[in-house]
Length: 474
Ligand code: ADP
Image (cartoon, rainbow, N blue to C red; front, side, top):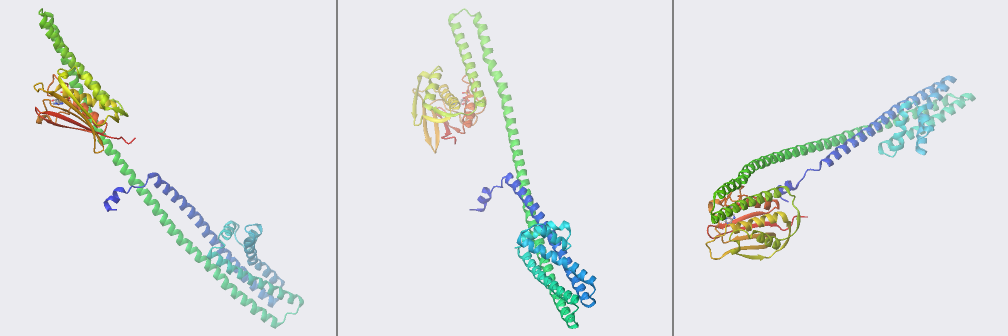
């Protein structure tokens, strides 16, 4: 696709989609941050717990060694007390693995000197993430540590038994000391691994959190920017539309002013001439002269009648909605001709019809106005000096459009007037018309999305061609 065409076809997403994206991104951002903070807080609780575990184990070893050499019962009790810390954590781990969250597990963590406010986070992370690599690895280290704690417990029991039986030798003491030291060393490694693994997980989660935050914030910024650019674009478009409408209104207003001014003048002029004619008729005794005056009065009234009809057409054309319906062109032509036969010399004109299309889908009111005015003009501007006067009416399809042609061999239109004949109140002969006919025709044609053109030559004749769409997409 060419670049220009692509940009032309590219449309910014709907504003509602953008708002939805912003909403979803915010919701996801809140959720991700909430859960990440929870994970990080639980990690911190585990690292904290590990330090109690480690301290408990180390204190227990110290008390056991002291007990080994001093045999003081208080040292034995301290040893038992301190060993309970890692043992409690061990119970919590085993319970969580087997049955999940319960009171035994929570009690185990409490024995492991974990803070009660951390219990929920400790349990939640274990239950939900025990299979996630970093935690699974940490739990494995923890398990190995628990096994060593168990060994320490067994050694403690053996030492206590020997002390109680008074059978502890110096060699035993040496052997037990070595064993306790080995266990302690190994436990230190396990504890360090546990903390490192959790630390590593925490760092990974932190990095992931930064990246997702950046991505979502970028999405939100982009969406908000697009939203604003769409809104600004829309505002500019509607501003332009309002300006165009305002200009249209100014033109319509000017047109209306002109119309009212000229209409009042044109409506008055036949009345003035009628009044004058009545006055001179009252003074006249000659019957033939009176008959002549009456004929002039009749002409004056006919002119006013025509003018009023034009005003009615003008108003209907402006006011009435377009109604697309089946319309018979033949009927409209026949109706117009029969209604216009009263015009002088109309009966001397030959009407030729070549209707290749008759029934079409269009607006009947506008077509009646168009056809009526075109035929009326063709009759009014017929050339009496010609032996044969004719009006030729044609309808046909051309380039997927309907065409209506009204041609005559009348007086034709002067070259200088051709550009003005569709203007309001333009007329070359004020006795023959108001100058509104073709103006109304043009408006009516435009109302039904068509156009009108004229071909004319002085003394030869004129041809008006109306083009209208053959369908209105309904
Ligand atoms: P009018 O009421 O004066 O006929 P129109 O708007 O109908 O007003 O026509 C404007 C002018 O166009 C007429 O005054 C006339 O000069 C010219 N005209 C229109 N139709 C024809 C035609 N068929 N033959 C010659 N001149 C025409």
